[in-house]
Amino acid sequence: MNHGLSPDPIFTPLVFRNLTVKNRVFRSNISGRFDNEDGSLTQTRINWETKFAKGGVGAIISSYVPVAMHGRIIAGYATMHRDDFIPLWEALGRAVHANGAKYIMQLSHSGRQMDLPGVHNQQRRAPSSTSSKETLHGFLTQAMSTGEISRLVQDFGRAAWRARQAGLDGVELHAANGYLFTQFLSSGINDRSDHYGGSLRNRARFLLEVISAIRSEAGSDFHLQVKLSAADHNNVIPWEGKGNTLADTIAVARWCEAAGADAIHVSTGSLFPHPLNPPGDLSLETLAVTYDAMISSGVFGFRNFLLFRFPMLRPIFRWLWFRMKKGLPIEGVTLEEARQIKAAVSIPVLCTGGFQSASFVREAITSGAVDGVSIARSLVASNDLVEQWRAGRDLPERPCTYCNKCLVNAPKNPMGCYEESRFPSREAMLEELMSIYRTKPGLRIP
Image (cartoon, rainbow, N blue to C red; front, side, top):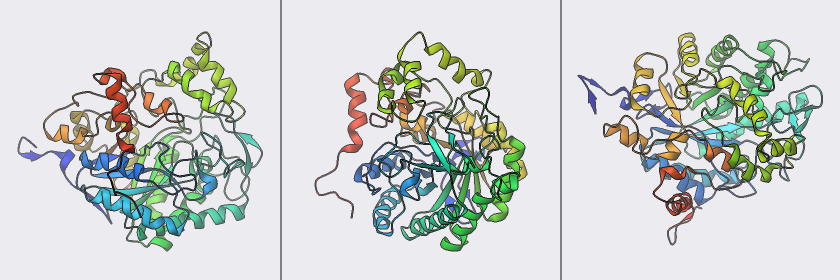
């Protein structure tokens, strides 16, 4: 679709140093518990990812993919810690490529942050130099030794090599939203006194070592992007430190570029979920039903359950959670921070944060704020959002309501849209949720 005499910027290819994507829309990292206990992926995950490739996105950024079993946030997420998993990921990549999209694997480690403990991650390892509690659930952690850090650097490098062997199109380091890289980077979390703590440069050392390891293992011509939180906003609990500022992140982004990163992906917040990520509402009524699956998760699990379960206590949580949102938009909540990061680097910049209207995305690109956008919930609500934009719609026929019921259902129920008002009936909603679990006769992955 043309706008005036110029092509629609949304559908202009995005050219990175080592990768070209057909348009400016990326499916951001989101998933459900689709996979096996040992970390091997299933046909269900392939069905999930191909939904978005068929819907027209230029590239899919995988969900959180641990490089080690002890780095999982929850069981049921595929990993990339074994060579014999390469053919499974190769099958996924082929399915996505057959539908015209690229596939970027998001390499991750949870550190202190977790949803549900499993048999492989009972003891959390994190940067902290002393025993500490993760903010949201209160998981107890122990400091990582320098030897453990060195081994993990190697694990990231090897996982990127596997991604390349599987024929995938690149990797993303998840250095945002409270996972291990964030824990090293953040002044509000990292209290180490060795060369991985103290100054910002020291706190960035682990991330930069991983970039170097990936370049060594996977080569200089394999796409590598880094997802960073523009600002930590770590004081969700008011007495905690605010953590890194935008100025800190701009410095880290420049160092990532110098180390060999091909793009920066901008998010926000030092934990996940965070009041600003994902933006929108948070259904405490739904949490009261689903959080019982997490009631034993960490020191604060039962406390959180009580805050959600009893209506008289919900205002306490609602005040803590929603006070940061005041005056901020839902769509493009991190866009202005992304604009400043883009002005400071010469590599492409992506941004996530509630995008759903074509006119807003078009303006974000043409104004020079970003080179592309990543979308999760609006694509979960409308898998064909990009094709609806191509057909001339500004908003999809049934827009995402930003209720975040997809998020709060995820620990207990299948991933998908749970806003019944978007469906003709509850049965239709359930039909859509279950659709990815079906396989055709004879269909199997290697």
